[in-house]
Image (cartoon, rainbow, N blue to C red; front, top):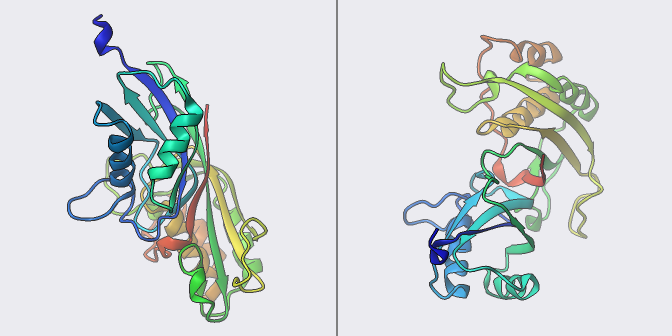
Length: 261
């Protein structure tokens, strides 16, 4: 092997507020997270060759407490602390790199088995401070939270989630296993402009389809409003069920953690 073509592989954990971005994936003529990360890397690596891949793509306005990218370079990074300091100094203020570690050539951030935990932060019953908007969805109507808690538990375990997939095809794999699904009081995120009572939908699993969690949250909101019943949610988790049509707003969704197995 030509020593000048040797690759080095690193996993960088990052967090970001997605509110002003058009999602992760690069797209023409819009500002995306991947674009800003690669622009910053191109600057601090002074034009040296590199490539980045993400562990998954988040939609427009979705945030991350903990996401990950794999960085491929042709010169080793010898000082992790100095690299992180320089990276963060040049990243936009709504993106932050948390840590970096070296991996070997067998690691593939896309194909490597991983467990993701998503949170959906929400409140209900009144108009809230505008500062809440980037990370919290506010439902103006009253919601039956206790009924929504019961509904959330129905998603746990292995079910057919085709009704919770955006634009499903006949070839997709829709049997998915949800390890945890619960609605709890929010004690994780606090601010003096938050309403008194806020809540989290907490969902943990190995693989999620496009808009799956937002469709699940949408069904739970409709359940809390009395538009659908517990039986409707049970029925929606069977093969041949009609697709749920309410996609909850993106800005309440947060990728909270990522565990590689």
